[in-house]
Length: 327
Image (cartoon, rainbow, N blue to C red; front, side):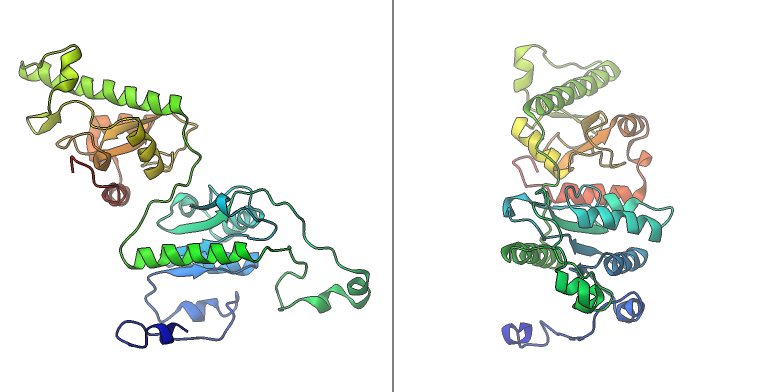
């Protein structure tokens, strides 16, 4: 089908392998290729976990589909990291199995750069189908479609796996085409939280200005007219009014997935927005969400307090922000 759509081998080459991925042949199937991306739609937990653990060990980017069975609300679909996936029995079981396969490392749970999952947060409305009396009499092992796979089935509305498959395809095509997007993975932050973050950011910027004024002996007018001043450079530091509003704060929470950009801590901790580069204004492309401890370290030591691999992830995410008037 793909070759019919694009018969030119310089743009598309398909190497079709009619073989099921199993725990036994998995290593062989992954060897010999420099994979850009693996798309996983395996239904069986042990096999799925074996594939994901091998990809994580080989540092291969994976997009994995969770369970579609027993669900029907397509508006509840999300793209997130594995730890965030909720109300999904397959994701819950997968987390347990992966912890046994990958010991002393759980970074893949929170890193969408390593492993992204497509899941539905809808509560499962039906259970696994029961065996009939006839199946029980003949032996339930006789009714498995494939050896090693589960025998009982979960009723599926045909549109759900189709939409989830389309989602996997969209993510894969955008990434391979260097058109990455930032999925909204967390619950929407309330108005009061957004207001607090904005006010704290404004106070933080005022402190930065006041500390520079005290060091240089220069000062700007204060009071109501101060918010109308344009920004200025002081010894390599941009000083001026906050360049974002409440809507931008909500957008930034989506970009940072409601968690600290350095440690991955969630809203259970105190989170604040801070400028990543003090030589640039407080626009969306220069604001990072940090937890309390990470912010203290950042204020004391700057970017040096952030591991180099995390710095690259932060800067990549900042680059993915929308282009605004101050970029």
